[in-house]
Image (spheres, helix red, strand yellow):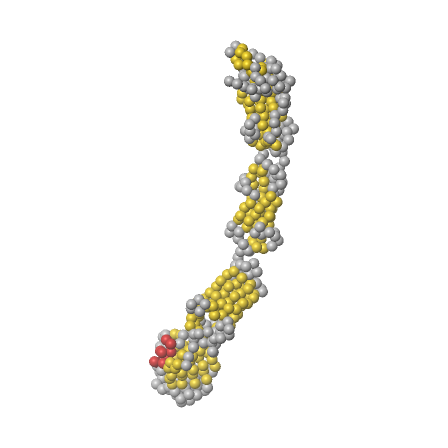
Length: 485
């Protein structure tokens, strides 16, 4: 075996033991043979209590006790120790020497006033006449010292850069920088700003950023704390996040009718929006193409929006008859949006015309005459109202019940009919009249008790059975009814 110490090695045989002469190893070692057996049982401990410091552990104290065992022999040994900061070499001379001990007793060296950093150390035995080889924690970190708690991290956000501003994205990206050194990990919490932190911190990440998803509407506090290698936690760095991911609410959507003839009546739609928003109302044909788009604005919570559509397109021209859909989109200032829609809106070209002077009815689909018939309307005491109305509801069968008390001149017994179409809210209908055998001019000329052949109706439009039946199935709700003199 060849062992090189400095420039040469002197090998001698003594009682069968290889003795190495040490050269240039300090005043305690100069010229001494390397003949002692190396120390064993090397340990590093906390001064108080003697608790072991595992290899590579960081501590927050500035004192460490280093100990070893001397092999059992007849001479008195001392423990010599070299300590070096990581990145620096060991000293030429041993830095610490213990008090002597005999026959396998423990040897101890105290280190104190250590500065922050990581350390390695080595040990050997010395008895004044010989030394042992070095052993110990020389190739790697033995322990570290970190006496200063971490500072509070500095938090920023790329998605929510201003803490005073409200953002609508449910995804929040947070990044922090950490002053100082020696950080082993971070704990963080994302909680409502009104609540306090109670949970004990634990390492949750070693990264310096986190992305949070599905953040609800509210004001939140993001808190992050750093833990150093010695286990000390620093104060929290905080960041306020304000989000509003709740879309506007569109409620109470209603329509004046679902079928209409724009020549006579428009479509009136109303709804409420729960906040200030830009409202877009669009009408679409059966193929999905937009025919009409309008933009309105609400300025206060739960504002009622009313829009009247006259069946015109974006160029002001009347759209074709057919089925349409309407969609309402409300978008608030943050970009949160909601959509409500209704399909099955029909534009008609149908109409029913009733002439009081001619006691006749005509039903048209555009310019095509669907049906015409003699009718009977109200007498002079209970006239049929004139104007433009729409069919509001249809019933089959139906029984009329007199609103007048029995004994009144206009009272009538319960009167069942087959087909009845309400066209005016006060109770005016187009219906068949099984009690009547005559229709047309003169049938409403007398002012006696209504319901007889020549005393007219109570204001309704009486038609023959087959006409009432045909109209019932031909005219949907919303069909205009023109009553003219």
